[in-house]
Length: 537
Image 1 (cartoon, rainbow, N blue to C red):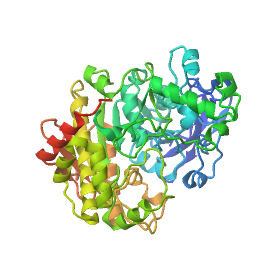
Image 2: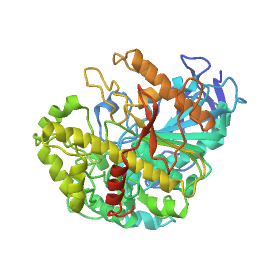
Image 3: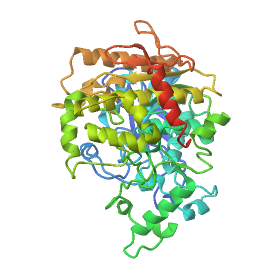
């Protein structure tokens, strides 16, 4: 077991895990604190230290709006937040184990590497190195203004959170061998905004060579899919990001005055999270009531030179092996036993709403009206494909439509991705209605697969049953095999076929595993024709 390792910044002493030979190294700085003049700048190399640094506790949480999941961590919130965590399953530094780097989700507005469901010990015990890290969020991670672009040296601003991710991956490349890891066998993974970040890093020339494989959990989407515009794979064009950033800056003063970078850097960090500190971007037409968060990645010409469509059409993405998928009960689909609750919430003017939240259609009236709004001249054809005559039928039809949209969109994404990438791609659809909390209905919800994939049912008692443990072992074994070899298949597992643009099928993962139809030919044809009426992002 490795307890003391030598990094380029100094020696670290970790702590012994519950599962030998795993050792954990927590709260390791991977960059200088992005404070003072370093606020809204690319992260700088971490400072070195003398002696042995104890790495036994998580670093502070990245500044964000407080919420119960963050509050329950019991950690301070601080702008000095660029710390990572390493769980090593190596016996010694010469082991060269595969490396899995996880990027948390949260709409680029919230999240923490200290989330107990993301603890890497159980995966590390399967023979790998697991790393996760904090990155800048909200305005601190994604504010763009003309003044910040001008001073950057790249005429770019707004992608500081992505630059943090690139810095963390650079740290991994330079240091992970000391923990027994193989810097030439790195898989990045993430869910929601974390999956979006995986997609963006796969498109960024600054991240080239820092990883070889990707697991993107919700969502990789076709560039013409309207859902792409507000989900956590959404981005902003530079001019729009700078315009909105300027308006946000003006909102920070009572007189509506624009502030220069020096004035902004002199403000306390919590000033950027007061009031509407998680604003929505209301200027984006999503074909629905959904809107993306204002602060999200930017096609800035430097970190992200181009959007999805242009990147894939020109073959400018990094050459990496890919897994991407979606969940049954997300993007507006919900379990049938929750239909009435959603109807009640829809009638409540105080029902919660947040940027990035998909609309849920559980009444006939809303289902039909939303179809008219989204599909226009194709609405009648859509309603014929997904017929409904009452609220219950409308709710079921909406669920079916959402699932078809997700699977078809990812299938079409795969077709574009593989035009210029010959490395393997696989897609999945998570269908297991999981325990998402005590006294809550089971659902294959957004993020529900994470605790199963990390093999972490033991970190939180929700009343798991034998099937939960079997499903957790299945998905974490698929993930482990992929992280080690680039192929998720292995002994005792149902064969997961490669993506084939000529065969629209996807791997179902859950209580049942196996290849399933993406959708009927008629429905694929409809969605494709609808997507062609939309602007490519």
